[in-house]
Length: 161
Length: 44
View 1 (cartoon, rainbow over the protein chains, first blue to last red):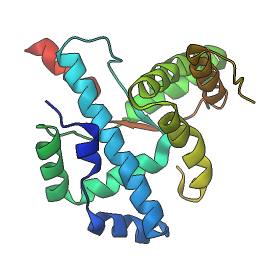
View 2: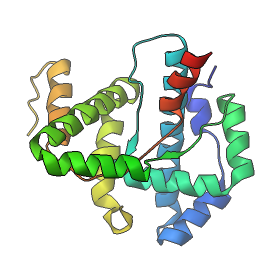
View 3: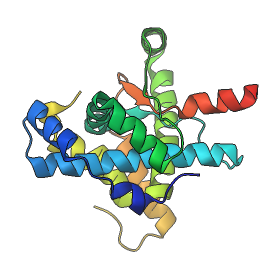
View 4: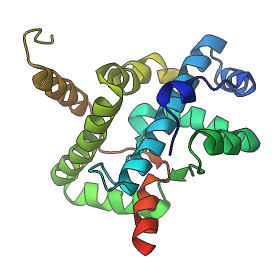
């Protein structure tokens, strides 16, 4: 069973926040803010797993999309600190949240689909995005949805994907 | 401009539609192990 959101958000790791700020030339406070949202994202992953195990109706898959790339980048930095990351997952969620990037085969398959029928591919992409957006909206609220997918891509476009 | 008189469900829908309008065909994605858990559970 995962910890509550506020407990997860209280986790601090200044070393990794400094590392991210240095790597991407951001202020410490900006990096700290992105780390806060990354912890929120990881909590959502854990919550979704709990819901799946309880057979509750949740999306089977909630990818962190390029629209929220800055959070993925912070996750990558967290993963560099393997010991801290493993302890964080164990302490707050009781299991390890693996990072699963899109594979080359998945990218190529999507590319073929998009080239063959762009309209159908876009419809599929919007359907998939809608599931993710609705889930985030319902679990974390409209403010978080706007922050991750509208505010951050613009505010942090210099380090975007 | 968001309709301030809209019901919460409509506000949510308007917001999601606004975000979906920005969707691009080419994208990257990473995921937590969420997708794999369902598979693991199915094998248990």
